[in-house]
Image 1 (tube, rainbow, N blue to C red):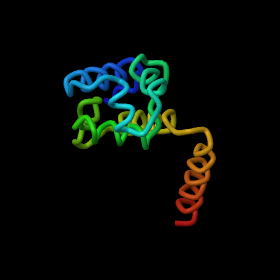
Image 2: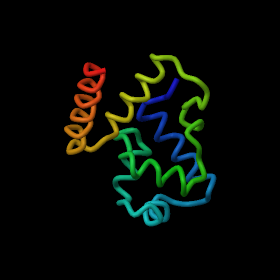
Image 3: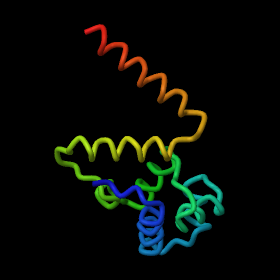
Image 4: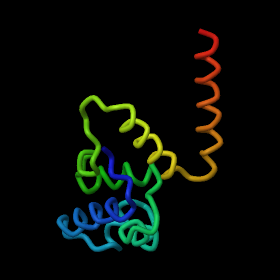
Length: 112
């Protein structure tokens, strides 16, 4: 199961930042994001955008498993949960793109 709780994600990031002996200002500079944005993520007020999430993982040397992602075969419910988490973390402007992709996949499935 992937833990898509904002507080859980924020705590993982905060703990990793502290373990790396970085303050929010230092980490936000390395990530190219505002300190306020990082603070909102760490305090569970918002999900990180996918691109920021990937940079956080890289800079803090985290893995997806640290966030509850199993790298083994997943059940349909786990895959749905992961997909929902990705959509929730996606900026509003990209939601239309996700919807278009889903529609294209559905159309392709109907034609086969």
